[in-house]
Length: 330
Image 1 (cartoon, rainbow, N blue to C red):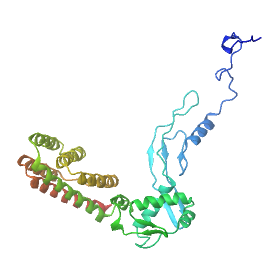
Image 2 (cartoon, one colour; image 1 turned 45 degrees about the vertical axis):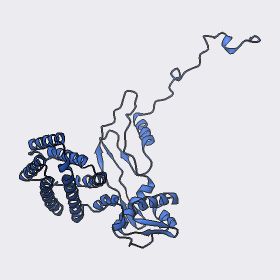
Image 3 (cartoon, one colour; image 1 turned 60 degrees about the horizontal axis):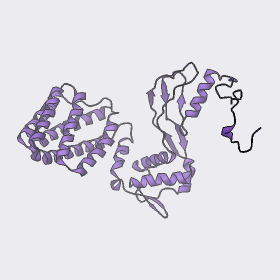
Image 4 (cartoon, rainbow, N blue to C red; image 1 turned 30 degrees about the horizontal axis):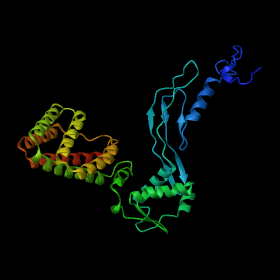
C-alpha cells in the first residue's frame, strides 16, 4: 500500500512486471513475398500520371500517358531508364525505389496551352476560354487552371485581364519560350537552330573582341595553356568540346559583361538539352578544328581580338552548315 507522502519514484519496482515490447510480441502472420512487395510499391507510387513498376524487372517506365482531354490529345513523352533490380533481403523487405518527381497538374495544363499558343492554334488578340471552360476541358480545379495561366503569363504569351486571358504575339514573349519552340516537332526546326548558332557566334565575337585587348600576361599564359590542351585533343571531338567551352568561359570572365553571360547561359541551357537528342550528331572535320585552334592562338599571342573573333566566325559557319545537313537528313 502506498504511504502518505510517498511519490511514484519512491515506490519499489517489481521486477516481474515489465511492459511487453514490440520485439516480445509474437508475429501473427507474415505477408507473402509478392503481396508485400506490391503493397510497398503501391505506397511509394507517386500520385498523378500512370507509372508501371514490374517486380524483378530492371526497367521503370513513366510518366507516359496517351489520353483525350476535350478535343486535344495529350501525348506525354515516353521515356525509360534502367534501374537496378529490387534487392530482396531475408526479411522479405524491398530496397527503396527512387522515382523522378512528377509534374503538377497546373504545369501540365500550362505546358499544353503554351504549346498550342506556340503552334498558332490561338491567334494574337484572341481570348483564351474562360477558367470555367478550361477547368471542364482538363478535368481540373479552377485553382489549377488559374495557376497554369499565371505561368503562361510569366512567359509573356498571354495578358490576363478582368475579362479573361488574351493572346500576345510570340515576338513579345520571353526568351524562355525558345526551348519549347525547339521541342514542338520530332526534329528541331532547322531555321530556329540556325538562328541559335548565329546568335552564339555573335556573342562569342563580342566576347573575344572585348576580352583579348584587356588580358594580362597571367591570363594570356592561362589561355595559351588551354589552347595547348585543345591541340592535344584534336582527334577527339568529345574531349575537345568541354575544353572549348572552358576557353570561351574564360574569355567571358575577362570580358566581364554580366548581361551577355546570362543571355548565353539561358540560350545554352535551352539549346544544348534538345540538340543532344539529335541523332546522328553533326561532327566537325579535323582540319576545321585545327584551323580554329591555330587562329585563336595567333589572336591570343598578338592581343588581336578580331583575329580570335574571325577564327570563331569560321568555326560557327562550319557548325551551321553541318547541323543544317544533319537536320535535313533526319
